[in-house]
Amino acid sequence: MPFSGITATFQHVSVGATLVSFANLDIGYAEDRVMIDERPQWEDIRNDAFGGMTGVPSDIQLLGEVVFVQANINRFSPSNMESLAIIAPNLGGPASIGNLAGMMGVFARQDGLFEPLVLSNKTATLTFANALLRHGRKFNLGTRHQQVALVFECHIDDPCDMELWVETAADNPCS
Image (cartoon, rainbow, N blue to C red; front, side):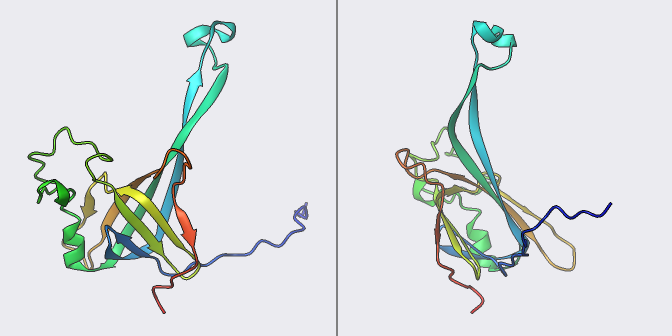
């Protein structure tokens, strides 16, 4: 039986090359895509009427969300990529990911570890005010070309507006 239930036209969307900038440094271009993963933070509310702690929640409360941005970069500035190894220059760095002496116990927001993350392509520019390279860098050696996998964790800027990113007009990095 042929499928004929869709009457609307669904178009493919192309955003083109994406330039990744972090901490006011142009890091480089993504290999294939930048994946943005929104993760709402939910809290289960339990009570006796629904079985207590072992029962189903009587309600669920939304407590905001965190966004993870994953970018596999294969065209990059080596010096800017190396700068990512310094995760806290304003705390008396250099404190590389491999050398965290003096970093134990710091708070990401109040100690200034968050930096702006900007994703630019031909259709839009997304700016995350509070991003952190929480998972460090993942890179390869010994192949035809080098790639660096980056995962940024992005938090809200202000608890009053709960804004995670701002979308502005395209600032096409290829033009």
